[in-house]
Each structure stands twice: as C-alpha cells, then as structure tokens.
Amino acid sequence: MADKPEEIKINPNTTVGSLYSQFVGITVTDTEVTLEFVYINPRTKNEGQVIARITLPRKTAESLSNAITTTVRTHENKKKN
Image 1: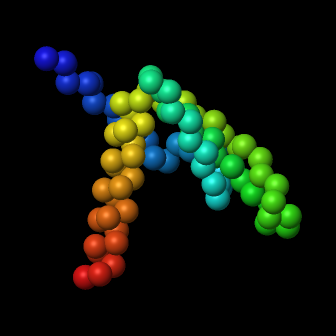
Image 2 (image 1 turned 180 degrees about the vertical axis):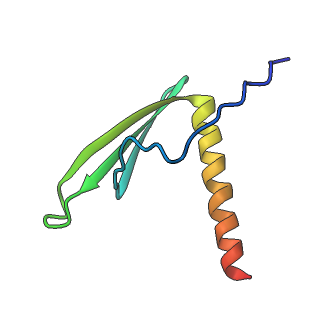
C-alpha cells in the first residue's frame, strides 16, 4: 500500500506570474501529458504563441482533469440554485 503523501502548504499570495491563454494543445504519451497554453493575438486572430508548456506525469494529469471537471460542475450547480 502506498504511503500517504506529506501535506504541502501553499501560500496563495506568492504568485510568480500570471498568463492568459485562449487555447490549450494536449499531447499524451504512455507516461506523460503535455499541455501547451497558447495566447492568440486578438488583432490577427490567426496567430498564436505558446506561452507555457507544462509536462505532467500521467497520473497527475488525470487528477487535474478530474479536479477541473468537479470544480466546473460545482460552480454550475451553484448558479442553478
């Protein structure tokens, strides 16, 4: 049985930077998932620039996907009530 991971405390007030992306490209291998965040220039609308490339272990990417889905569903359900 796997050991429970140590709790990590994250200070939300320490931001290195912030980016805006309208598109995400996804590449999957047997062991990793790579996300390429793209900013599309609003003036040309047909030119984009990769502003961040994040490679995650596959299990972490699957957890991220589930967390996003759950968070969006929770938000949508709150709006309905």
